[in-house]
Length: 198
Image 1 (cartoon, rainbow, N blue to C red):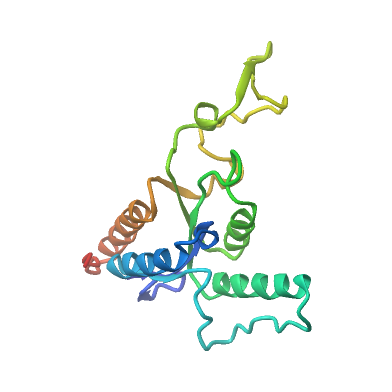
Image 2: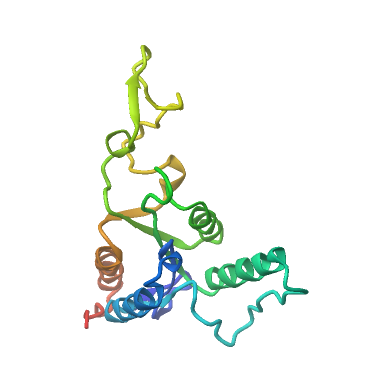
């Protein structure tokens, strides 16, 4: 349970953004994530979940081309964001030193739609400490990577564009624990009973 934008106490719906869908164990992860969300009182939408019967219609591919398939996948994931209240994103490094670009786009869409934005990351130290491939400290006191690109120093684990996200160190369960505490504190402050973790 949580208090939504309209002051209604109900189950929050979360879009579970991340790269888990790209791995062979995706179906097992999907089940695990659903069970975890249920335990913490959140309805979780994994990217591979079937679309529920609601007002958001997925794009219908016009042919079997890769471009049409991409539009269909994009529409499907976008609609999952539109039908949820919050996003919980896996922002761990993916194919390099930064989060998955598709997940980053989804985070931007969710933020732009006014979602409450949460994320988890294995190592939440500041970027300058956890960034791999730092080669030198410039004369200007700025850290640079091996290609000469300057590394941000805002005391955050990720790019400053994620500054409105509440980022938890660990995996999805650590994020859910933190989110449940935030929501329960809000419920108690408003005079409601907190949700009891199952």
